[in-house]
Image (cartoon, rainbow, N blue to C red; front, side, top):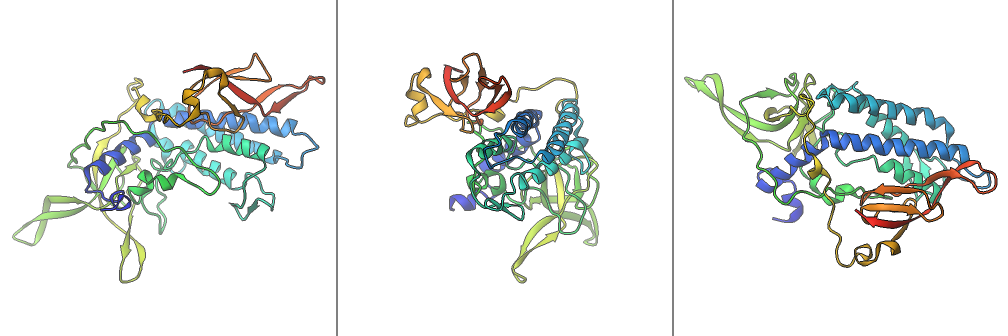
Amino acid sequence: MSEKMKLNDMQDNDVRRQVFWMLKRLSSYSLWKRKRDAWEVFAYAYEAAVQNWPKSQPEQMDADMLPQIYEVLSLYNEGVSELAKGHRFVWRVDGPLALAIDKAGTISRYFYTDPDYWERGMQLALYPPPVEALHMLMRASEFVGEYGPTEVPDTPHMTARCPTPGSLLNPDAYKFAFYDLPYPVLPADLPEVPVGTDLIIRSGQRVPTDGIWEPVRVQREKAFGIVPLGVKKAENNGCFNYLVADGKAPYIAEWNEALGRAERVATYWRLLWEDLRYKDDAAPDESEYFLEAKISSGFPAEEQPAEEVEVRTGDICPVTGTWEATEFDNHRIEALQGMVMPDVLASAAGSGERRVHWVTWRLVRRG
C-alpha cells in the first residue's frame, strides 16, 4: 500500500489514532487560544500599518478592513472565554468561533486587492515584502482543519467537515500556493482509539453530545428475519469527525462509480469519545498539541551561537527563545519556533512619531 493510500485507510490502526489525536487538538482550548492570540498580534500590526504606512510607498493597506478585523478579534475573545468553561456552543453555525473563522476567511480572501496580485478572491502572486509581512501575521492564526469542530450547516450538498483522513494527515494539505502552514508534531506514543459506544445516531438527527464520532454501517438483528431490533454490527464508513451537540449529524460524500462523481449520502454515526474537557474549570495539560520539531543537524540555527542567529520581520522563527530587535536594544520578545517574527511599533527617529518598523531579530537566549 502506498503512503498516500494509507493516509485514507480508516482500517489502519495508526491512521485511526492519528486522526483521533488531530481532532482532539483541533477542538482544544489551547489551539483556539493560540488562534485568538495570533489574530490579536495581526490586528494591532494592521492598525499600526494603516496609521504609519509611508506615503512614498505605493502599497497601502485598506483602513476600511479594520472594523472587520476587530470584529473577528471580539468574536475570538467571546468564544475562547466560553470554551474555557466547557461551553462548546461556540462552534454552532451562529456561535462566536464559527463566525470568527468565517469572517477571518473573508478578510483573507480580500486582504490585498491590487490587481497585480489578486483577482476574484484569489491571490495571484507573492505580495510586496511589507504587505507579505502582515499577510504572514494573519496566516499565523490559521490551522489546517480548523473548521473541524464547527457545525455543518443543514443545507443541500453540505457534508462532514473531515471527508478523509488525508485532509488532516497528508502533508500536502498544509502547502498552499504562496505559503505553508506548519504540520503538527505528533507525540511518539499515541493512545489507542476508544472502543465505540452504544450511542448511534443517523445523518439529520440532532447530535446529543459534543465529541468525536465515527461514521458506521449498521447491521441490525431481526425478529424472525423481518423486524429490525438492536444493532448487531457497526463497521467503519469513513473518517472520524468532531460533532457539536444540538447540531444535526452531517451526511458524508461517497464516490458513485456509475455517475463518476461524489454524492451526498446518509450514514450512521457512533460516539467514540465524549468531550467533557474544561467543564470543571480544570485546565488539562495540552502541551502535547504543540510539540516542537527537532531541528536537523543541517539547520544552521542549531549549531550557531545564540548571538549569531538573526531573522527578519515576516520570517519563520527557527528556534524558541528570547529575541531582541537589533535596532531597538530594549525591545525583546519570547518567540516559539515556527511562529512568524513580528514587526515593532516604536517612535521614529527625529519626529518621535510612532510607526511600524520591519526589523532584524537577534537570538539572545535559547528557550
